[in-house]
Length: 103
Image 1: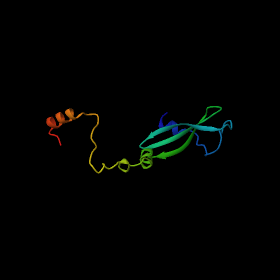
Image 2: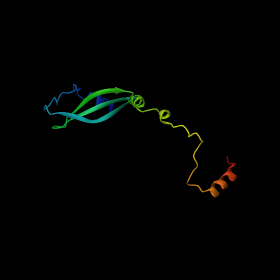
Image 3: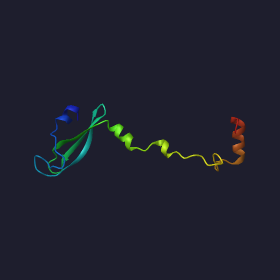
Image 4: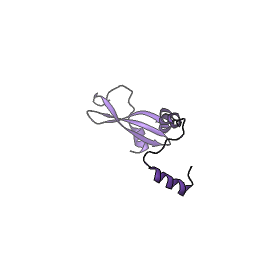
């Protein structure tokens, strides 16, 4: 659906039914209009007519404000420093230290 087609849909007041048959309408999908604008498209559950829902700007910015900060979830290292890697045995660890100028 193009932007002009999406905007040409009949606007439907929130909470009202289909203007053609009176049946309830449900959310169908979100149409991206470009430049951060999105439009909710509603569809009649009986006759299939489509209606224009709410127009939203900068949906990506809204999602960013809802998403928790990555830094807030970071955990500090234990007091003794980084834990040993139990997967690598001591011989392999020593070989890696020698090869890469270990710690």
